[in-house]
Image (cartoon, rainbow, N blue to C red; front, side, top):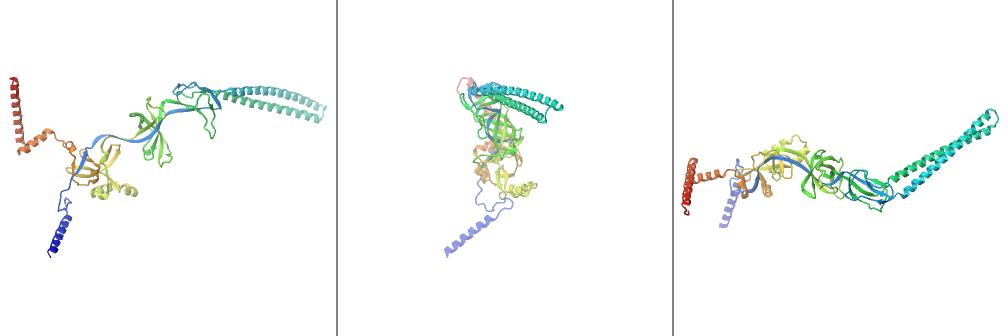
Length: 478
């Protein structure tokens, strides 16, 4: 019986405790039965700053010359002379290499002989044609005098037509031979390869003594060398499809070379490809973007790997906070007033966009006294360190920025405390004022009495200093 009574008493006590714990204060929304005080969350804070902020788009790329020409051979021949080397500066028209021309000279001589032969044949055909014409004219006179037969007249007429046709054929053969001879002269000129532009020999792909071939449908041909104009350089960057809508021609950019990360080179966006390309073996789409380098820095060389930063947006004098202070919270985790304000801002969006944005809401927490207060924000542009806040935070607020574990536990009205190393940063009162307040609290007097005590301390310090000066003047040790 005693055991049963004890169990019933304990059950009643536990039930009462749970019942009282379920009752909450309507004003503070806290349990009436506070078994223990809430433990304050240790946080780090920062003040919003007014500064210029720039949004950047980063992309990898390769450096190349704006004007770069691959020099190839237009005939099949052996390189007989090459007076240039890699790095040589050349002007337009300078000799780059000379090919063997023995076969071409033989072809030209043969073509010249063929032309002379056909010129003589044309002269003979013209003589035959003139004789046939004279014979036909005589037959015409005899025919009028009825001194010849009709058959003989027709034979002379046919002979003239035949001689005229042979003359025309010889003339066409002469034109063909002259064209072949002209092509031979052109091929002979192609054995001397000259610089097409002013620039530098960027690469030598062939050597003296090698046989170069012309390009075909399946064979690109032999590239002898590459001449590049290093006075104008560009970067061929690969911008991700997520960032490419923000990049436009004319935007400012910076180029960071792998050889010198700390010295950026100014650049400008020239054009953005209208069609993307997919990297082989990867599900990534990039858009080729050309950036003109606005510098003649000798460190920039064709073929270098670089990273580019394009300034796609900027804001002057923006109110910014660290990016880690902006957190995402589900709707059910936020107060009703914050959720209502968020829904009010989404009235101009369609239903699908509202459903997508309403899953998580961007907020920041500010420190109000010893508790955290949630703020609905309207973010602007952001860089890698800070984000612009158009609405939601004032310059005099104190924003909670971390640590991440504390941010994950924060709720509206949650008790917070600063880390020990941040206490001086929050307390902005002058040191003299703190000492004066401490003196006033220690004496238990009002502000006037504390001021009198301060004057007495100053007078006492002055008297002690005078006594020390008198002792030193008399040569005695204090």
